[in-house]
Length: 180
Image 1 (tube, rainbow, N blue to C red):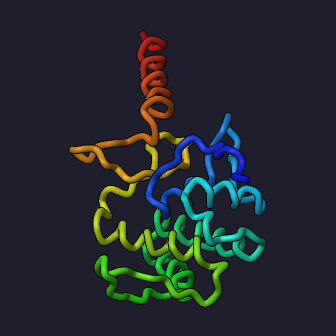
Image 2 (image 1 turned 180 degrees about the vertical axis):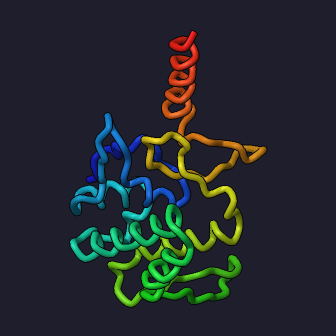
């Protein structure tokens, strides 16, 4: 049986940003998918991590710790965030092997419950090494979502043009017509 439908407005971002997006605004209220193990199951299912990861209270704690570390690193300062991300990463390492299909990487974890949170923290390091200037927070003041800017010219500002971008345009239009 699969988990219920993912209620978040933005999904499909790289794993680290997708974990950050388990908190979002809806009608002026902050929503949190990771309030319980059922929400964790929804997130694991939507990210493709449900195979091999059975959600439980320990995993929920670890994933929330990883989310807070990533939030601090992305929205705060590197000085504050780096030790928090490192604390998550200390629970695992990568073992590299050669197979008939080529080189592969296998995570080795101190506890399997760290798996999803550790993978998200590791994904953040990969984003920093490949596209640090493309990790973005939505420019709308009441939005808390994050995305990887994959636009050709790197100028994407909104998590979604249909929602936040449209709201900003409507606000600017209203301000212009109100003053006129």
